[in-house]
Amino acid sequence: MSDGSSFSITTPIFYVNDVPHIGHAYTEVAADFTARWHRQRGDDTWLLTGTDEHGQKILRTASANDVSPKEWADRLVTDAWKPLLDTVDVANDDFIRTTDERHERGVTAFLQKLYDDGYIYAGEFEGFYCVGCEEYKQPSDLVPGTGAYEGQQVCAIHSIPVEVLAERNYFFRMSDFEQRLLDLYESNPEFIQPESVRNEIISFVKQGLRDLSISRSSFDWGIQIPWDHDHVLYVWFDALLNYVTALGYGSDDDEAFQRLWPSVHIVGKDIARFHAVIWPAMLMAADLPVPKRVFGHGWLLVGGEKMSKSKLTGIAPSEITDTFGSDAFRYYFLRAVTFGQDGNFSWEDISARYAADLANGFGNLASRLVAMLQKYFDGAVPTRGALTASDEAIDALAVSVTERADAAVEAFAPHEAIAAVWELVDALNGYITEQEPWALAKDDAQRERLGTVLTTALRGLGTVNVLVSPVMPKATEKLWASIGAGGSVAEQRVDRAWEWQGAETVVPLGSGLFPRIEQQPEQGAA
Ligand code: MSP
Image 1 (cartoon, helix red, strand yellow):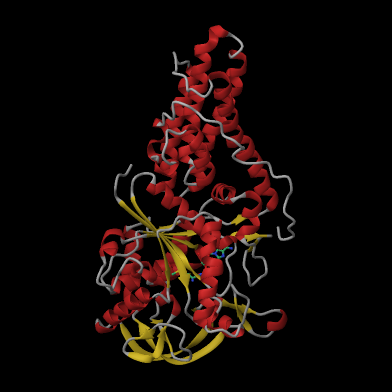
Image 2: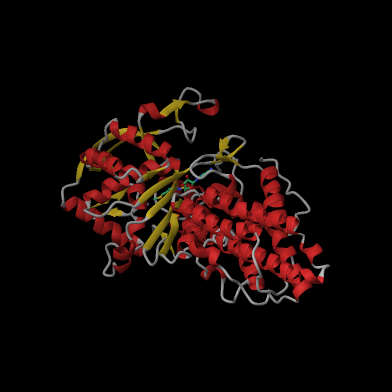
């Protein structure tokens, strides 16, 4: 249980070469859910997201579209990446762009410090580069190409040929940090999660770290190396620094940095290595604290393959939210995918979950309970009389799911947190069926018992509503307006959700929380 401690969480910053798909939205939702939960346990919470705008990938896309890279980035940020936050209801506290002046200033200060302290040197580089990954590759990272690329070596992730680079570059002495990184993983076993990603990273570092080429001179779309303006900074070195420049590192006002750093990073497992190897090494070189955690989540798969625009399997988040709404989008991906593992997306699965868990489970519980309180008590919430074992079991379950859900979020397991809350949803539906309030209502002598049953169920529903508000902010706010005691559900404490007493009067809910979906969207993709 925490009160007032700081909790700063980040998403990766997204490449603006293309528009978002549901894989990107998934990362956003996972981080936003975690941030909302922490806000609702009283932590001084900060959610950062943003865009990664430099590098060859963006430069090439902009050139292919006959615009400058900055114009291209501006267009994509305004038309696609910021709107994504509304589409999936993300309440971020800041949005950083790597073309922001504040970022460039902080990066420049950081680089100069590392250079002055001897962690950067000039050298010759020759190797393979994948523009899709914006990463140097070892021969062992490559696979034989097929189709148009038959006879060439291609990137195993993007299936496109790598480019041979031979340049004079600046290098970061990453090899100096091999042992310190291994010590970090050893002494702080929770630093990288989940276990599968941690093991992969430890074995990667144990194979030995090379110094990292961190500058390019063959193009100029990037942040200039402060002591050599013929070079721009390698895009990953630039991008990783967003996490501290957004908090004011390198500026006159670094109060947020002092208060909120180190952060928790939520990233896809494909980029966990950058965050758990290069990034802490950079921070160690600058004498700054390493991140609190790096959590590498799994991939959303379509037809068994990682969803990607380049492979034409991308699904726009709005294709789903237009039909099911942002709450159901958030619920589905947080509940149905074990956080940390890959998850296959299908329209059938989301439709089935929507109908069973939301419309029939939570939605139906809320509407019938509110309707019965209206019908039998004109909305005035009755005082409870003597409690039976069944009533006490509901009260006890509300305490237990609150505690378990809170612990699950702490352990980065939103799927478990939601599953725990649904035990209460199911128990409440079962309780109502069993107690038969409609039968009690026919007998005047059972008036007090009827009140006890409805109020017990209402308290349970209120607990559910508070606990799922970080998952489904819209529906829970609507229900709060009906059963809450004023204010906003977002102000309620999740870690004390069971204490909820609710309003003295319940007002009608109006339309249902989760309207039935008449038609399935036409989709061939899944
Ligand atoms: N710009 C870098 C990150 C720099 S962070 C300092 C980048 N951008 S990205 O736009 O390509 O990807 C951003 C995030 O989206 C990554 O965490 C990536 O794993 C995630 N996803 C991209 N496709 C995904 C799926 N199909 N499924 C789940 N997440 C996926 O990498």
